[in-house]
Amino acid sequence: MKRKPIQGAFARGLLCIRGLLVDKTRLLGRMPGLVGVLMLSACALTPPESADIPLLPTQWQSAQYGPVAEADALGQDAVTERWWESFDSPALETVVQQVLAGNLDLEAAAARVEQAKAVAHMAGSELWPTLSAALEASRQGGSGGSYDNRGHTHSVGLAASYEVDLWGGLRAGGRAAVSRAQASGFDQHAARLSISAQAASDWVRWVALHERLMFAQANLASALRLLEIVEARQAAGAETRLAVAQQRTLVASQRSEIASLRQATAQAGARLLSWVGQADWEIPRSDSLLQMRVPSIDAGLPSTLLTRRPDIAAAEARLRAAEADVLVARAAMLPGLSLSATAASHDGHFSRLLANPVYTLAAGLVAPIFNGGRLSAAHDQTLAQQRELLAVYRQTILVAFSDTQAALDGVRGSEEQAKAQQQELQQARETLTLAESRYRAGAENQLVLLDAQRALYAAQDAAVQRQAGRLIAAIDLYRALGGGWSIAMLE
Image (cartoon, rainbow, N blue to C red; front, side, top):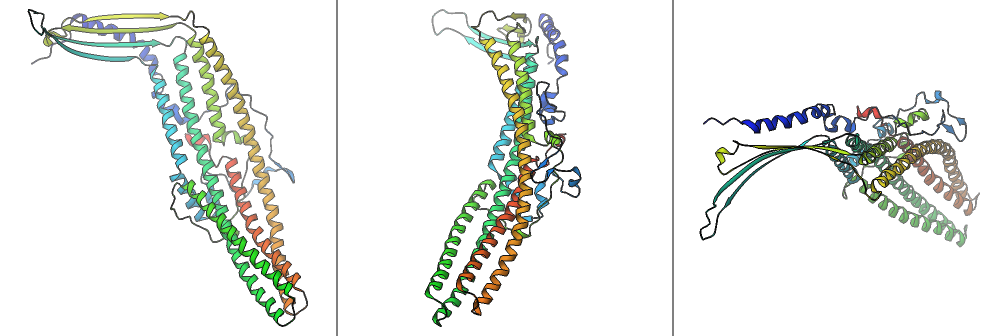
């Protein structure tokens, strides 16, 4: 059976609907495919015209030596996306990769990005017409008596509506949603950098506690060995009971320190597992922090920081969204034009349903007259939000510069402390060796031996902490410099 062609008025109605929408559809076709391209491509982000960028110095400053010469960067490690590999520690690489794969905060950040994309998609759909179809069937009849108006009724219809973007408010709303989606994506990158850096620092602290515990246990064994010597000398009448009591006090102090370090190590491990997202993961440990490579990092120029920090990019995207919100609020105060078209047909016989369709075309112009000042207040609110986000954007830049300068000073300060600490440790080892030898020979009293032991224990413990400080300072500098992130990575 051949289908009946759509006839007469119904066909003309559909043609009218098409004529009303075709021009606007062409205009909408210029819009990027539902913000897909704009969503995270943000490669051409430049500061908005309203953003007065704070003046940055041309060079980083060193607290000890003044400006850092650009030539000092020769031979230094570049800041790359996989910055943790510059430490040459397979254990650290394993930890960071596990954190990036399993951290629940990062999983939540990824979900927020998807939500922002969906919101941007919905905002972009406001520029398109809506089309809906309806098909209905009904039956009526009486429950008794002489009611004869019985039968079936069928109806079919199409309805289209379109809001004309006279003042650019809908387009501005789409741009605002896209900018917020971009900001959400930048926030995700910032979270990855921050969490990976914090986890790496916590791993360094955890390993440092393990090494300090090992030194404390070795020092306890040494103190117990010297206690036997002091007790033997006291039994032979060559030493006093006071000397024995003092050595036993040192042994008890070492045991207390071991118990404290064990507790701190367990707590640090639990914190590290929270970054990983697993409660039973076996944390890898390097052989020694003292053998780990401390990278020498090329900080670049202060001006490059604007394109290397995802938090700055996020603040900039939110400022762009605020500027678009101002246009949306302004458009809401102006008249709006909407177009609609319907085509419908009713008949008691389904076979003749499309025989006599009826169409309706309408255009409506709505202008706000009185709303109690609500629209004006909304416009003022968006202007205030724009000023707020401009201040936040400028403050983000200043904080980024301050973080980087502080991280640079931390790196240089930790290097100076580590050099001095190495000399202290070497002298403490020689002092204890000489003190023990002279004590055995009776040339020194027990107080000299006691002081030498304490000095060596303190120097060994400080050496591990100084090395951990150098490694953490390098991690902080990588984080402050953006961890190798850049706008260009999104291309």
